[in-house]
Length: 303
Image (tube, rainbow, N blue to C red; front, side):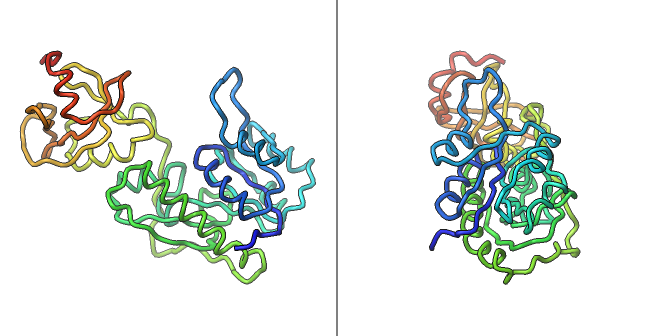
């Protein structure tokens, strides 16, 4: 495919934005990147800024909605459209209106399902079989804008990391597939379905990651997959703090939180069924198979 010649302004801040930007830079003419600034006194890399500098693209770093408004009021961009992925700052109608063709948000759900900041985690938590990407015209309402296109993908028991990678690839493919027709006026945006009740995700907290063994095993297993990046799934096994990173549903029953194990396997009872722990990460150590954990830590197990 030939590079799309019409310029775009890219809005994005997180790791998903950085991966998307790397692809977009090969297929679109990026006039500027608008992203969050590097945190003061932080030594951590800032992927979007670092990549933009490597590409030689002008970078702007407003810290909040008001600064973003000021930037667009006082900067003459040539771009008729913006592309927004994983940005994290509220965008006003004033900013949206500054682009003749608006701002296209690549949202990782099948809208109106899972509007809000964490659609990927919540699609896993809900036990959804499919999810997808919605290319949407940004609006003031939370993910309520008209759609440019939607495409589905199967979740297939993926964790959040694997599913995110799959959705980034789908988003990239859709941008190159649909944006030329939108820019030429051959693709007309359409309203989200009114036959599906909207559902809403929220920002996860550290508290969400504390495993509650009084939940059914199927719910805890979904949380482990959904929380693999953040906030992770914390518990104590015989007094040893660990993060469980992979598990399957077992079918033993007993007091929630009670543990049975042998040399190669470990089951923890839940409200319904049990959790067969496959991999975990002791705090401060590397991720390991459960057999390695049992071999190395069994002499520390205390009730």
